Length: 255
Length: 199
Image (cartoon, rainbow over all chains, first blue to last red; front, side, top):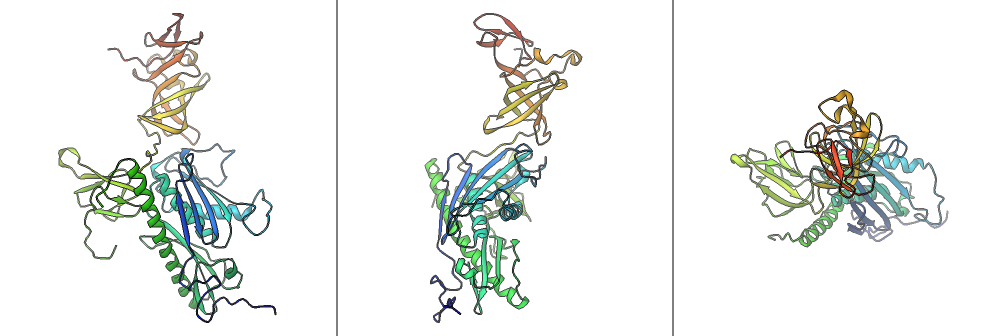
């Protein structure tokens, strides 16, 4: 066998120098685009995602909207377009016309957000969410969820709660939070989880890999830990952005 | 929020975020825009500035969250909408709704005005071409949410109808009567269903 990667060093450090319970460095920028109602640039380590929200708007005609869109006079339809840039993984990747995985990811994100977005306030409309993955260093699904939450908050679309997500895995006998590309190739289980930050209730959980029952609790707790750590950063970013914007409108605060 | 910790009402003027618990809904506070009620507690649904609005007759104080963006509006049943006529046919007038109540929309909604909703009198002899023409600005009232394609509106009231139109000569017309408008330059009269409130 060739050189074996040490996923967890003797000192307990991972391949990128993190501790098992640490998430990667987050960078959040809100309100990038003027044309979009809400937008967010989100970096989680080397995973970079751009989210833009348009809505509520008139529902697109049947020809242009995805077939799974549920149009109703009772609530707004959430439409999620998820695409990966051709340069997002190492080397050029051919852009697929009917990208099954991207469509599935878009549907999963839509279902997660139907739980928190108050769509009943906008009947006969649609809220369109565009997600573009610029760089893929694993944990892309949680990164998209977090970026979408921020973009929806920036757009002023009422939500019941923040939706935050994180992955967790289990390598060398330790539960790891927020897997990166190298760690995902170790062959261990992976559990992406999205929770509502304040109620701590699970909105979405992906079980694509086999996890033993005894391991599941450990990995799930690690994922929850990751979500809460991410929420701290997301919350701080929204506070800073909102405070800044409201101050530019001349609304001061008693701090 | 810790279980059992007393919930003190958040002071107006603070910045709140989606999911922030604001107050217990015990009759003193009620939910306004940007606030929702769940399990007897009022939570914020927007990120922004908390405001209180005292309601008349000593009712509960309404809590609002003011976001930095103008709140999005969707035409509701009974709301007054302003739009431009895009297409007319024998039975239907298509309108592009641009303003809802007093709020201009970022992107227009489609509205549909049916023949029987154009006016309330003499419905058997309505001719659409004598009531509306493309590019007329119309004030209408939303009748129903319709389907995904368009909202259904009505102009069957005196104060609803055409508020601005351009004559065949290409100049602005001003209202002459409830059924006619007159060109300001040429003096020629044209038939329209005018928004006419007799003073």
